[in-house]
Image (cartoon, rainbow, N blue to C red):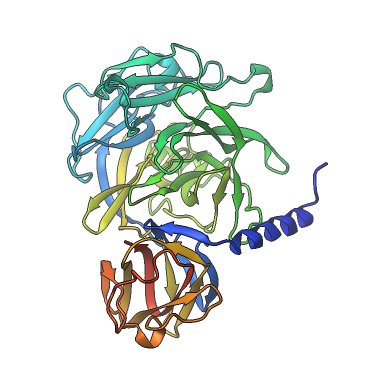
Length: 485
């Protein structure tokens, strides 16, 4: 029996409150201010979504085998500081998914900022059951055979997801032949499962392979085929368990509004791999902006200007729930009619570090148009979102937690008039002697890494392993991340 929404919300809120009472184990992991997992109380402070900065064109889909309908981009960090590769579908003309015209091409970069392509940049051809939406990753699992260190998955509903492996990311072979890693859906169901960029990676925190894939079902008021996300896991990349559809929750545990999510682009954040960050493509079918004359002006294919898209920020810590603290758009389409066409603004898979204080992600622009390209968006390192308080001041108190380490490192920014101070309390809220606000050294400035100090110094050795709460008092300031190290 399906429960009424009001009762479901009460149940979810009760469950969330129960979880809130538990003692968290932070260990020495970095925690980003992207969700309410660590937060117990906020007073005149909020989690604030940051605004990515468009840094311009990274590379164009300008080869004869690429073109207007290229897409489904994976940004892969090469081992041993070897730079980056961007893998993507090359497709110059609009054809049915799974056609022989589709290839896998790639571009390269030493720093993630300047990109180039080798003379022959086709990595895979003649495998149409895979190349429509091949998503690639470098397998960091210890002990993986050298000829399987590069892995990829691709496929459509009629054949399921097919696995490919490689020793160098350039010469590929099928793993398990055409045997799908998860069962295909009967055509009679018309589910259009997998018809998107499905992805997989080795999870250091879960110690298993994780796959996030296109899942489709009917949603009342939205139609019979709403694009959602499923999750599966595997201990060995061979045997997979389908855990079903992902849920979307707000901070209080209630269900978030359902939206079409065309790609999910979920992956471990490089500085906190237990936290999976998803910069997903939010798809608005039938929401047309351009007139016929405007579409002709920008040169978009006539079949590709009756929908629009942008990106949204979601996070998950494993399991089948995405946190949707932020419903607002993350990277807006931007100025220019060419940005308001179908399948434009789809983010690439993975966020990479592109400087000592900078990280970047990449977004397709002008899909179905002659100048189809990838553009780079930059953010402060760890800066997807922040804990923010204005000029009047505000504060946060965390849930009870235990940590390992001797110092508290923060990533923060203040105005000239702003500041942060820190207090450590026991589980009941009593201040540990020497670690109160009156002992806290006022922190002013803008740094990616700053160690918090009290009048007695920076050492937290006496509190490591104990149950504590952290109180942060702020004025005109942002806190992006913290780590007990």
